[in-house]
Amino acid sequence: MLKKLILAALLASSAVFAQLPFHIGGRAAVNYGTAYGADSDVAHWATGFNAGVAAKITALPLLTIVSGVEIDLRRINVKENYTDDYSYFSNDNMLSIWYLDIPVVARYNIIPLIYVDAGLAFGFNLSSNMHVDEIETHETRGVLAIERTDVDYSEYLKRLDVGLILGAGVSVLPGMLDVDARIVVGLNSFIDHNEEGLEKTVKHVRMQLGVTYWFL
Image 1 (cartoon, rainbow, N blue to C red):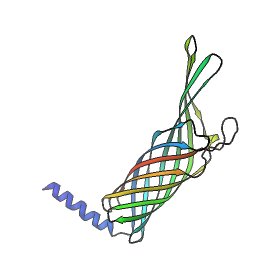
Image 2: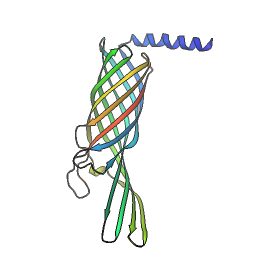
Image 3: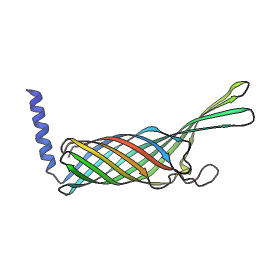
């Protein structure tokens, strides 16, 4: 009996929320990202996350504008190997970048419970860190050194990153709970220059699986 009452309350609440033109909620997502571009050959996929506040307003019966403010941790695995005369160096590094993201998307409802998203994400770089994990192996003496350190990478990155958002989702509980999948493709290089001062073309690309709970 209690389960039926709870279900009835959820359905009634979702029906009420669905009539409101403006909604506020919270969104959290897991993102799986890497980099692409002319200078991205050492970039590999890694897992991050983003979470924040979302807002949507109904513009037309089938069209909704969705925006928000999110804290976004983007991580890229950077693997690079090289040799000198006698040793082999193996680097398995992790670049972690914190962004303040402002996504703005147009949401079109194909049918009442299924929608597609398209828009832009504006990311403001807050901080970045490169975790360096390097192993030096000598050709005859074996492992000589293992270096693990953290380097502030902020000076090499641009402050603003702009990405194209494409996605689709389903309203599990209409007006209350949405589940979506998105791909976000960077439109500009997020690296300004490398340690040698050379310009680099490296852009973000990431896939997201997110959940939004609309509490107002």
